Length: 368
Image (tube, rainbow, N blue to C red; front, top):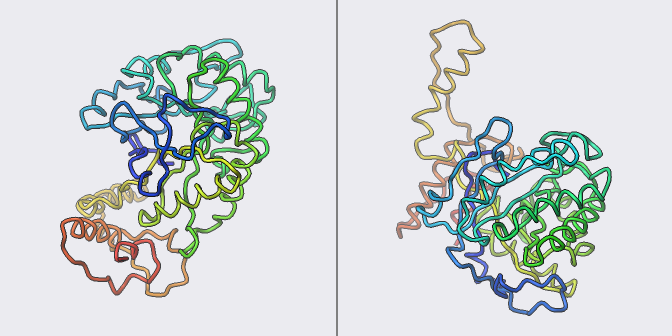
């Protein structure tokens, strides 16, 4: 989950490649027995979109009118994050300004998703205004809050998600059992308020290597968490959100891997992706034009001297290094990765960088 002002969203465009397609979003039964084997989703606009970042109308961040720009860029879908405390800072007292600022800029309910964090200073087991969310102290309060919110947005917002990336303790401080129990309450509240609404479960960060590829550190924890969600929460969601951080060359295999988990449980629900790992600051081609000045300014805060000369060098990981590459900062390799991707897309050939170890994340662009 990227804490950026705008973060790219990839929704549905690649699902046909692995036969993940099915019913129109006009029909989204939560009963797995009524699911067809074809799970293709049809959207009224573009299946691609751009999501707002982590905060919207909260903690000093303005609730911007951004959908006109999204449409101008060709996007047809967006999402925002909101928190329980942001909307109901005290029991029974609602603050709708950010909710309305978002909902009122949607042309149709199909354009927007609200992802709701169970973060509160009064209503949850581990109070927090932002992170980490935790289970509600009183399930009835959570049901009432979610139902009030969905009723307030009925006819304006159709897609609803609870507590994204709960396999990460930053984004969920409860257990997998508590997550599923609250997902069931969330599902009931949403459907009671708006039977046409769609409940999106998961927000799985997708940080795992499918069989036969290099695994991510501690990936089994996330896989085990969502094995439980898919099994025990199967009747409490309509779509599953699998985010595509990590190696872009394993996207199809990761989607198919999660699809097979559903099929093994006897059902087949649509998979969407509401976040994708676009380039971060260190990955932009003009990174080196700015890094020296940024490093210099940072040093200036730490050093009383006003004349600091710095010439930072990018870090390279030796071939066959045992270091955890996922924790290393390698701006030169990342810059080269994007440059080589551009050449591949242009039909040009590329050569393997001899200083990048086999199996590293940057090495993936050389695969046939």
